[in-house]
Image (cartoon, rainbow, N blue to C red; front, side):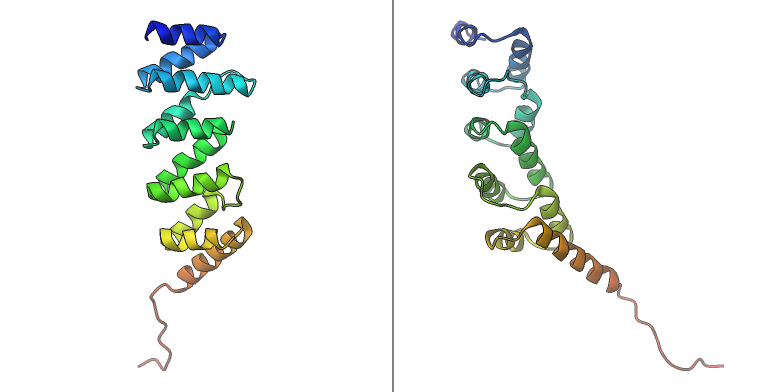
Length: 168
């Protein structure tokens, strides 16, 4: 690390546990300015920085460092960060994930990751899911629709029963 970065961390009264977290982030390839900003943000929220795994997961899911800092500013890094990674895992595109995160950061009601995954697993497209979210669909409504879609899919097996007399 550069000496300027070390001096900035000293000014923030970084404790030994945080130094270990900082080293892990540096090894993960994060920019030193971003690392210092993450520690500063945590201290502004009056807690030590301990969200290294979440930050590494976000970086691994192709989130840019400014986006990670934006999430950190809300002091919901662990909560929103985990959801962001899961949204990528279920196959949503970057623009959709960004839209959903912006909604969460602004406290606009949005379906949970579990409900979104259930709807996606029933065959809804990303566009259809986004439409439902923008129309204000709640988790309860989403789960009800997912259950109905699963039931319809299970009922429609493709087999038909032949009615009539048996031949002898």
